Length: 195
Image (cartoon, rainbow, N blue to C red; front, side):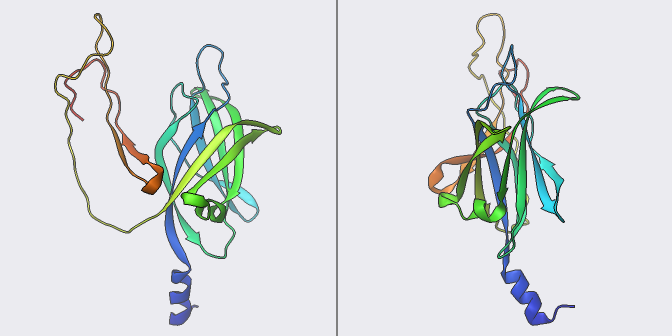
């Protein structure tokens, strides 16, 4: 059992961090279209990597920016091993491995500008880059509800069809630009969408 002074010391040696993932120049795994990437995140526990969570699948994209982020308890002085498995989803039960990245949470958090870039490797060959941005999480229990609408949006599909718009929300990420925090579903063939 921890005494009060030990408990305070442990809490001071940790913080929550949020990881944002993107890839660049992924190997194209498909013949008639582009790779449909998804990233599965594993955490090492007792010498085994166990499933933690996964990103959304992004259709036909070799340079995806995933909106799903991951929050970890970063423990100072503890080596927290992570594995990022990048896959191409070809169907409901069909995937192909693009490659893996093995790293630690400390390496990510300690990277210059809180941005780490890793080679995605399979069988000794690089199949693109994984970019991981980290940010310290501020605790805030406030809720906000938004509703957005587009009115008479420009049709980019031509004469015989209508655009299928989506809404992408981003926030600043310090000096490194913007990070996508949410992306809505596409509203099919509608120039006056409500999200």
